Amino acid sequence: MSEVAWYDVRGQGWPRDILILLHPPYTLWHLSYVPIGAALAPQMDWRALGWTVLAFFLAMGIGAHCLDELNGRPLKTRVPGSVLRWAAVASVAGAIAIGVGIGLEETIWVIPSIVFGGFIVFAYNLEWFGGRFHSDLWFGIAWGGFPAVTAYIAQAHGLSWDLAVVALACVLLSLAQRALSTQSRFWRRRVTLLDGRYSTAAKPIPAAVVREITQGDIVRPVDAALKFMTWAVVSLAVGLVIMRI
Image (cartoon, rainbow, N blue to C red; front, side, top):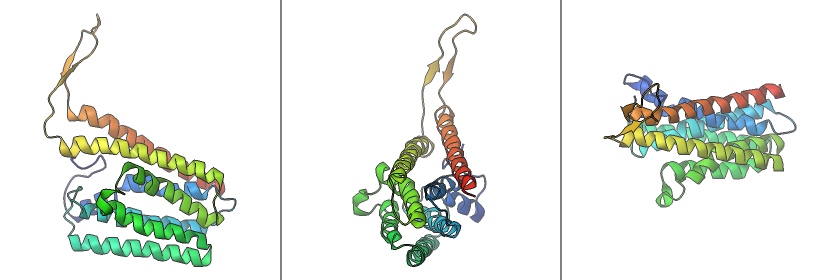
């Protein structure tokens, strides 16, 4: 079992480092909030949707994850710090440029989203202000509700009550992911010794069984839940996009 994540791959070198750095399942999960939010708009602007997805991939899929790896090397990659810094700055700058373009061409109401996104990607991942923004709640807001809200604004040029409810659902889903992934990371990365046994209830057939508790007994159900939730959110996003075609 990998010490990093359930989606880690065997081997070393640049291919593995780049793949694990992008967190493919979680990046797909959080990018899915973009079409989920956009699908609520009365009219679908496919060009704006494409640019919004690209902006969040740059800022969140690349920028945020590079900044996170700079802050303590949790993924144990060998990517030089200078490469991570330049990749983070370039990708976030690209996302901001896309946002400004949408603001000039579509609606100025995306400008507050650009300002917030440009701030939170650094404040969260680099734990600015003593880590005040590096919390479960801010993760849910920034990585859950924020993509959905921004995508809707880019489409509808405003806000709505149905968006508020869906954004709340995205926040809650992200909080659930955070709770599960925190548990998985703890048992994978920090626990070095596990000592204990468990016994099943005694029955005539079969008899009670006593087994040693293993790390896998604790981590596997958590990872399974994360896998199912990842593909559930992605499937929902794909379904909503197909519905709007």
